[in-house]
Image (cartoon, rainbow, N blue to C red; front, side):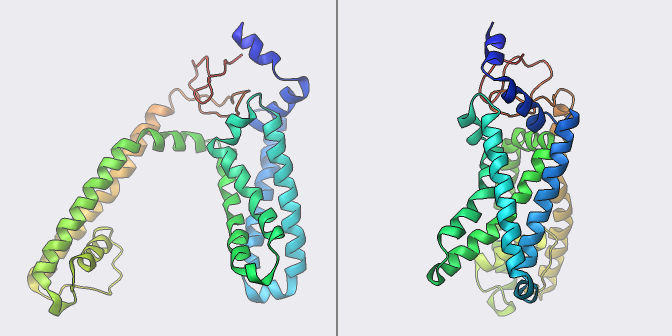
Length: 275
């Protein structure tokens, strides 16, 4: 009865929009996703080209027109998404709902602050348009699997990062004692910076040990760094293997969220019953 009631909450037009916008397995849904991907990539390309001064001088007017076209398209898409679900507030507060909002807000905010005194703020919001690239995740088949796997692994990753933080403090303190101020390790925080650069195998080269003991210790840190880099990958990969066995592609008719289990009867985000 609850599933039937949930179904009746959507009008025929809402049902059709929900199938097109949220259900990627339908022909109309696939076409919708392809068109949105094209608009997203094009809008981000315009933002990047607009940041090149030589190009902006010649095509500034064209970029402004295109930006408003993209803003209008994403605004209509955002409104359609809110209309196509029975719980629009739930979708608006979801991750993808916030991303959709970020795709349209910068254009309107920069329009209301056109004065020279607001130039810095306008520049910030114009650059924020690049966040539209985050919308791509909504149209990639495996994005929800990756996102859910990272969320499920957050506790183990947090423990791992705390362990790494403890390790770099320990390494930095040791290198401060071994090398000392005369070799460029003038403080423990600066030595910790060197430890992070070395442990992650980045190696900027702005600081390096001069003593034989310090160099030998650095070699050990670099070797340990290769092993540490692989740990988060293993954690997320293990969770992805568990998630991929049971995740469905269907979207909730109430809030639009997806990534539910195949056997789920209710939405894990808003609790609405599935048909």
